[in-house]
View 1 (cartoon, rainbow, N blue to C red):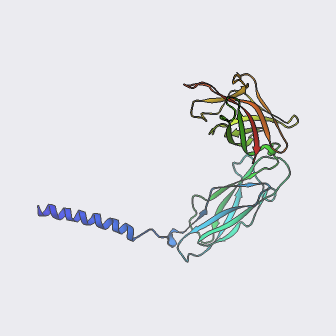
View 2: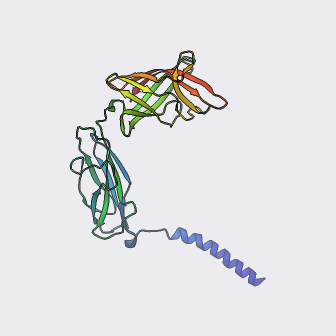
View 3: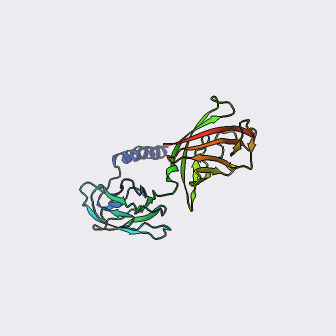
Length: 284
C-alpha cells in the first residue's frame, strides 16, 4: 500500500510540475532560430493603379544582426510573363532587412495595349548572414491589365431587380461582381445574381451594338434556398421562353439594363417560376 501511495504521489507531482514548466519557459527566438521570408505569397497590382508593396521579414531575437537579402525575378512556368523594365520596376533587389519587416515596392508600367493580366515571381535568392530562408520564399505578382475592351463593364454592380410577380413587395437588390473570361474578350463572368448566388454565369457583350446577351438555362446554384435555380427569358405573366436568349442594353458609363430576366427553380419541392424582373445594373 505504501509503495502504491508513493508512486501515486510521484504522478501527482509530475502533473503539477509539467504545466508549470510550460508557462514558465515560452519559446523564444535566438540566433539559431533566425529566419528570412516573405510575409505573403501573392500580390495584385493594377497596371494604372498605385504601386504595390512586398514585405520581407527577419524573425529573430532583439539585437539580431541585419542581413542583406538578394532578390531575383523568375517567369518560369508562367504562361503570360511580365517583363522587368517593360511591365514593372522594383525599388531594389538588394535589401537590408533587420528584425521585423522591410518593404520592397513594385511599380507597374502602363503600356496602353491590351495584353491580358501578366505575372512574375519574386524570389529570395540569398542573404548575407546565411540565415535560413522560410518556405515562403516566393511572391507571385499579378499585374492586372486595364485595357480590356470591356473594362467599362468590369467591376461591382448594385442591381435593382423590379418584380413582375408582385411589384414592390417582391423586388430584389443584388450585388454582382463582373470579371473577364480568360481567352474571350467578348465575355464577362457575373457572380452574385439572385439572393446569395456564388455561382457565376456568362454574358456576351457586343460593343458595336451596345447589347448584352445571356444563353438560357445557366445555373445560379441555389440562391434562395428553395432548390436549383436557372435563368431564362421571362414574360410579365411569369411564363418562360426557355429557348430564347436573355438580352439587354449597355451604356458607355457602365450601366446595364436587362428586362424580362426570369428565374426558375428547375427541380425539387418548389420547382416552378421564382420571378421575372426588370433589372437595372449600376456600376459602383
